[in-house]
Image (cartoon, rainbow, N blue to C red; front, side):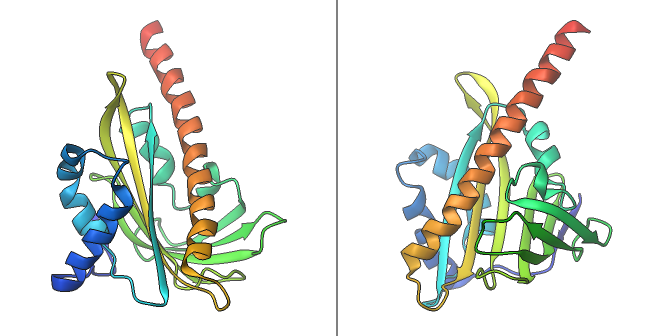
Length: 212
């Protein structure tokens, strides 16, 4: 099994507190049964400890496409612009495995110009990817994001639940809510774009399979 990661998650009391923060974010979005099914993944990959100077959030997107179709876009650390419209270009150093870095040039009009990021976790079997921002021209200092994919069903059809959580420093002069609103807006837009692309590809593959 291909499991690689550079950093460890909080444990003990810290993790229990972090787990409760996640559950508070997900209440109303997932049923108690769904939360129970996703407990291990949430505990291991989305339960970040959040200090007073940090902002945390978790965003979900249900996509009506098989998990392998969605993962084919998410796993491309070398090509995030495939579903992240605010990225103009990406230059990667490394082999696409943990420890690889990338430099992103962002589109004009944003309060940012570039970002340097490192791949922290990559698991092709469990569909998990995490990266950390190391530097660049932006205000998202110490931003660390983790994305996990999970099989589910939508209207009786095979689908994918994408969960993306992040922790980031609260910039001077901003509140936690202002920071969350800004970052959530970007993450949600990215995941909506991922849904659109994946659902189109899923329908295309379905037509091809039917034709053959």
